[in-house]
Image 1 (spheres, helix red, strand yellow):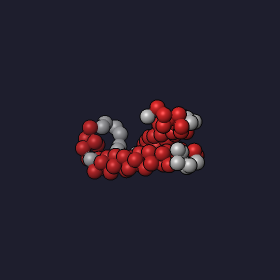
Image 2 (cartoon, one colour):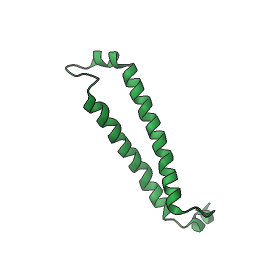
Image 3 (tube, one colour):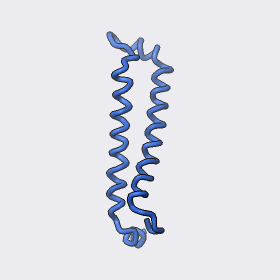
Length: 89
């Protein structure tokens, strides 16, 4: 913003990078869950690891939490005047 970038573009850039990291973590977690599903099946009783509701719901909830964790601080930082932020550094 100090070099002339619009505030909204900076906010969405920061949020987008955080969401890419979150999506990578979710994909790694799903891959690990599928790779270890026999071990997980042996630990669960009267449940299955391939429940489609859980497989679809958990990444959506984690994505929403990651979005909020990135969006809220980025929106707050966007409201700070760049000149004041640079003076404090």
